[in-house]
Length: 258
Ligand SMILES: NC(=O)c1ccc[n+]([C@@H]2O[C@H](COP(=O)([O-])OP(=O)(O)OC[C@H]3O[C@@H](n4cnc5c(N)ncnc54)[C@H](OP(=O)(O)O)[C@@H]3O)[C@@H](O)[C@H]2O)c1
Image (cartoon, rainbow, N blue to C red; front, side):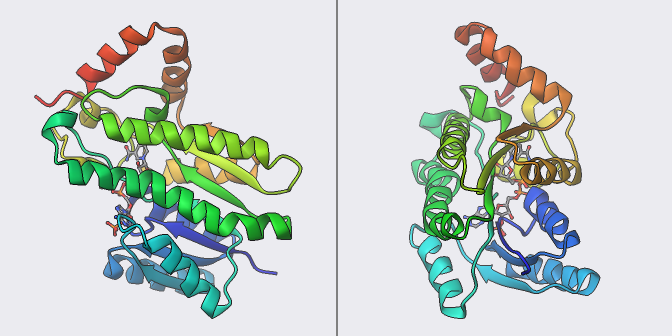
């Protein structure tokens, strides 16, 4: 039976490239984001190239009711989700106290609460059917405290911890959870985060295509955590052994707005 893959944040960047990876395997797709026009363009391209079914759901995951609405819509259509890709996310550069609190709470809603809610809604059926899995898009930021991007880094630390815990809980079920941890990647992320003048945003970036391919491979291989790129892997490892005070000062400088 053909697999159905739901991908959040499929309208651009890593999510859009992940959609192409799953489409190339002939999986049917459900693409979720707010930008309907971008989703329609991608859906038309993937249907034409791969002769697959692609369904679009426009939803704002900053709204707490969205995960349930998505789940209910698919249930009423009789569509089962075999693979869930929790990719939608964003961050904001700046000091916590100076950024709008409402926007920072939206980071938690999109990057954390929606990811947990969608997982909670779709995972039980995967376990019951003993197939499928979840690919969460975290970040190397999940390994670090992130001064000048505090809520974003903390949200990715949650994704890291949550994904690893689920991976362990699901041992022996044939359902896998992978946490993809990219470093700086070419996408709309820096435009949304408004940190154009930080060292972080001027860093050399991997392409979203490379990152998605690595994440897709890791998911298919049943890997728990995938850090993309050698530099990012070294960063994730060395920050584990360096004193925490050194790490947080360095990250603060890296994310500082000039
Ligand atoms: N780029 C990087 O350097 C980098 C590094 C590490 C991790 N990541 C992670 O990678 C993931 C994808 O980001 P990206 O780099 O590909 O950035 P991107 O090009 O800005 O893509 C973000 C995606 O998330 C969706 N999204 C954002 N807010 C949403 C909302 N309220 N409701 C529904 N969808 C929403 C966007 O769709 P709409 O705007 O159409 O809603 C878009 O499709 C994120 O989780 C990000 O944290 C990125």
